[in-house]
Image (cartoon, rainbow, N blue to C red; front, side):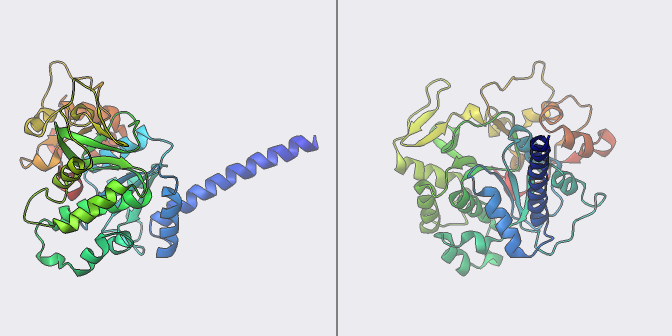
Length: 341
């Protein structure tokens, strides 16, 4: 009897410790604790090299519904992994926003494996080749700074902690089975909207060095997909894809365009159309919605039966339920630096 009581108490204690641990991590990333504790919480979360990372390099505090869908879908597909959303507008002294003022922020904060952290670029770039560049640059005169800072931040965070980076217009539909990978946008051309590596991978270090050596903010994509493609061509000899097979280059997988880009950028409007027969996307891990192309402000509308509405209903049902309205009050996907490619 005594042994059963001891066992019961032990199980209860373990459960309580687990709950307290999760509560502390949640609290730290919601900016209620001093910055060093928030940083410790971040280090703890990402120490197992399995995090899913999103970035917001503008000061925006309320995510768009597309950002919310991207984060929610990742949390749904990777329930045992931390989904970390770095936000530049968030600080260690930011009070918790109200549900009515910031519904998407509040919704994401309530998901068990989603953690919101301040994006401190100076701290992030420490101990990387990007630190000296960032310390000297005049951001006020840089063209496309929101996007360039996003390109730099994603390299640094995955190099430091490992895991998977995704743009905030990428809807996850099934787990990515690779550890070190780049996503092909087209044959022999890499994107930087989705990639994953183990910590301190030399490829990412070389990318950060090349970022500085060939820095030119006037050329769109020079610090992003063009950089990844340049370095991949140095790393190995790129070949055309054979049918649906991925390519292997040393210890890096170069994934077929079907894995993330089954609908190419030139056809992005098809996401907002009604299909006679919707694609299964059986060969894809996630879908990049090309939100940067959406200058027309095409919306996700409840009851429209468009492909994108049905993707929301299936892969981010909470976002669809709480944030998507009908034709009279439709919400459009706003442009942001995390969904540029």
